[in-house]
Image (tube, rainbow, N blue to C red; front, side, top):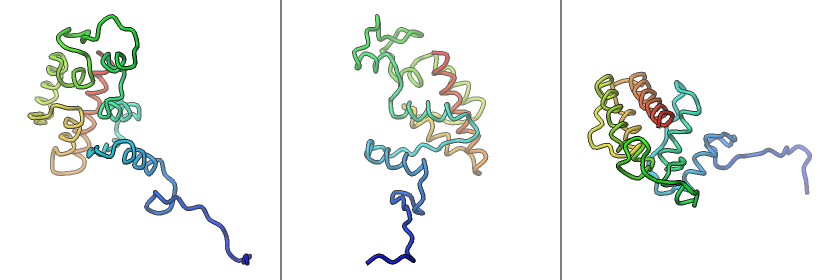
Length: 157
């Protein structure tokens, strides 16, 4: 029997408070699509949204590098890096391994004092930036600098 005093309500079960949010969708998607991914991307509201998205896609290796285009059978004359021509262009090469990118990271290291020793992936560089300094503002500033550096390398490569 139906009682007229009861009101139906919508409840979003993946949200912590029963409310729908884009954040809960992102968490659900990341946990189902990439369960092995220990990395949690911190969205930095001090940088444009497009910078956050690019960095997130770089961590997931979902950018159109020449290596990825080749996997998708896009005809390209060469998969070598257009800047150094020393290795196949992958996300890690573009942002970390290319000598040109390494020079940029050295400038960021000297300017900000961020120790990138033993950071060989985009994910590690971003995670390292979140450990700089004692307070939230320093961490967020360092993170913003690293995210914008990744964006700049992408736009210039």
